[in-house]
Image (cartoon, rainbow, N blue to C red; front, side, top):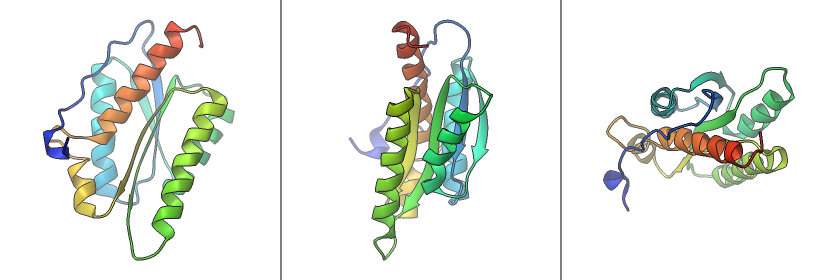
Length: 160
């Protein structure tokens, strides 16, 4: 399915008390990440949940920031990682994308957190803009939906 054919995700129904999430974002490509954040906030709001936003320097810092948040005294029901990496002329893109996604997955699995990931890894900024817009296709909205569904799963399984 192409990006243009994708439908806007719907907010899941969340059982129990309203979840509170932390959106950790790397706003290097500000317009793109702002679009992802808007999409996430829309789904979170529709689900009756709330969220806070924490900005970090870049995509590489996303898993580190989630781990730092887990060490803090404030508790969140779920986490959303948002960012964008656009391919350049060097191998840097591959290293950053792989390390970031591995780090995010490692934190999620090691600590059993509910996590949605909206890290765009694109060849061009135009591809990133197409995946972060208001026209229905928004990976931030998809990441928020994923986090909320994981919260539901954790609650249903008695993991929280």
